[in-house]
Length: 223
Length: 270
Image (cartoon, rainbow over all chains, first blue to last red):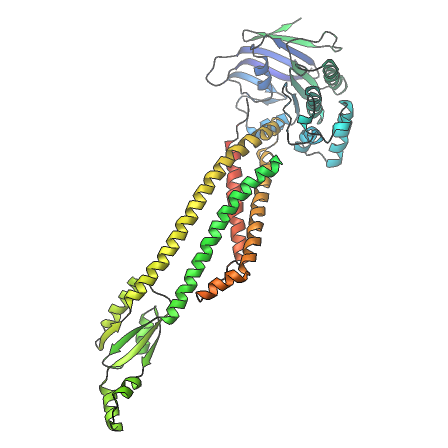
């Protein structure tokens, strides 16, 4: 099976601070569903940041989607990010754009045709049950609704990889279930690799998944 | 509403810069027109024992536009108390020759000194009257006026640039978030900053059009035209093509510099 992520002897740290991830080695198969867990401050979000190139490897090698991220040039990083969908705990929506435009962002960046983009956005808005809110701005929506918009944005361009950082951290049950269904759906139907960083793996999740646990800067697969 | 406020702050800052520049241009044009006016009413009187070679003096001095001989008839008329025609002709021959030197433009005091010395070096020239004290006072007044306006315009521009720098921080904060989010989805730099440059250019165009409207109105305003007529000059207050293009260019350049500073100062959130 193809590997979408290969980390070899990978160390990560923020500038002028101690090493957070220390010489770890792991790989993730494409089309797999992966949970990364760990205590607060264990480095799971740091690891996720490194997967979309926001934090460069200090040591070792990290290959995502065939792109080596150590010393990666910005053009190549942009190319990789065009094929990744990211969901953040704090949503990271553009406040001055309507939710429709927010969802369309990856499609615009990837140069999709306007009518194709509009159809895709309409379909996603239906999926996240926000069709009636299309013209609203993020701050006019609840936290759960904003996260559903962020989820739709992450899925809009059919990425090869979805990275989600605590996607249901502060959400109501209805929104949380909707988010999990969308992630599982993308994995099962579109064969998208999904990596979710979370404190707790939901008990009722209906998907075969791999589980990595981070502790003391090391990453271990949990059977 | 908040967005309009953000636009207005840059538009107003640009407007004050464009206003200062155009006011400076108007003052400069007024002074130039006034200098031409003064030059046409100003001349140097040269007294020579012999007839002067007018052509050689005119060609050897850039400042000189023409030399006109002054007829002594008026002087002779006053002296003529029953003199015979022959004696009058003899008197005419013995009198020195008077010339009026006309200048191409209103000279600086040092230019007038150089010309006076050159003329005095001619063997036959016995006297050059340049009325330099009058000239000096007028010229210094013009220079003082121009300096005051220059200082005023520069101070306005400095204060406005400081305001723009403050605005820059607000813009940086406002646009950084959107640029970071776009970057997370792989948008190249030009795409991330396109919105910013578009806003900056639109603001610059708004400011230029506003200045165009105001100065076009001013340039046809009767009161303004009357003021220029009082001091005997006529100038182009606002050239709808040249001035507009120049001011638009300056406004766009400033806005683009502002936007570029924000783009260069952008740091991706980690």
